[in-house]
Amino acid sequence: MHTVIAAAAVYLGILVMLRLTGKRTLAQLSTMDLILLLIISEATQQAMLGDDFSITTALLAITTLILLDRTADYLRWRFRPVDVVLEGTPLVLVDHGEPIDRNLAAEHISLDDVLAAAREKQGSHRLEQIRYAILETSGSISVIPAPSRA
Image (cartoon, rainbow, N blue to C red; front, side, top):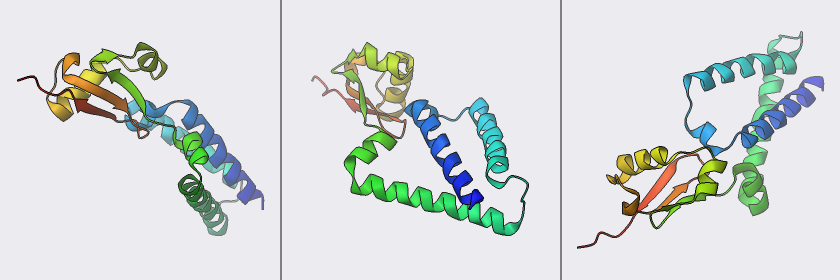
């Protein structure tokens, strides 16, 4: 029972921490992020299993984590407020070529990041060419181009 409670506590703790770090952190994994995830995984493994490194205990912890993940997926699918809390909502970064500074600042995104996404996805290289730039819940930036003026 200790393993189940420890696994659940670790799962919920990491979920809260990752949600607090923002969307962008999860979408763009840097070398430092990878190192942090490896360290977190080692620390959580020890917290969940303690001194019992048996296959049974490991499988119990893994089963608990998978069940928690599937339960969270179901709750997100079934109840919109749970989805908003766990995944967040898309955030408009640029509206008709005008940057929304408070949203950019809140997510620590520069205009260069938005323009890089615009170049990559639409071939746009100026803000005037962007109708909307939206930070998706996945952390990616979607760009909707402005209609071309002929």
